[in-house]
Figure: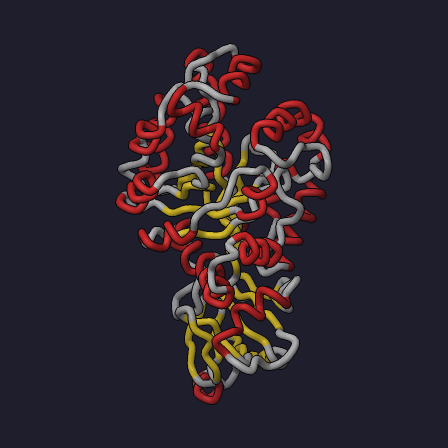
Length: 407
């Protein structure tokens, strides 16, 4: 048993003083320090540095490790030129991205307080890295394939990757999941099979959705920049599905919809009605010229969202605090202190619910996953701690996963 004491604990969206946490692999009690010391006299006592806040470990719900080699290869500024550059440089980037490189990126996430992440895996190449990283990983095996001629072959390959992630050692902290690449890239027949598979095994499910205006035009009208793209690379000029059909494929099982920048109010309302959630990737959306996800629309619908870095194919770091600060700037009309609190909630409690995990809050029975953040001085106004955390933090001061310290 261990007892950790800090100036503040982040509990239910508030910053509470004069409390401590008793924990092993899970949180056993939250109480006054003197009460916990009396209750567990043999416990190891840990006193955090002055001005420290204990947060639940942050959860990065959507990241692509396989493209971690990208620095200047891919073209930013607009979605379709970026996608063309992915096709052009994909093989070289994948070859250059070895296990050591992906492990370094996992460590960067860890040092920024990310104790869990959702890894979107197109090829399964990062499975070994995810097995060995200390973080919890929801390993989203990605399904892609819009050509009916090759659908069965692609689905069988996908199934083999799912089985490989299911066979991981329990000590690896891996949860197998399923990712649907996007409406424009997955045939409806295999899409339905994959959703059914996720439902049968109660696996987390996610998908990219309406990231760009070009995607919307293609799905609605079969025209625009995607038409030229599909004619050039896939010898087809007709989308395999439409927005409504794709949405309804998920009606029986909640999923985590990523981006949604170009989703309209009716589509967002449908996501809310069916129990879905949204992943917000501020820097990726900005760098690829996709637009701004209107968080105010999600909040009006009470549609939960998370904050994610996406991968280095469309970002410059996997640091969650870099992402938070970008969100503060992107949503420039939102009250900055209130937005800071919402972003932290989105990346802890709401993210844990979206990925079906037993962490994300400092409550009894939850996994003992913590990020300790030390502020430069004692806040004059405790209600602004969230904002000062986001503005002043580059890395967490300490990180615990399942009760063990890793930073």
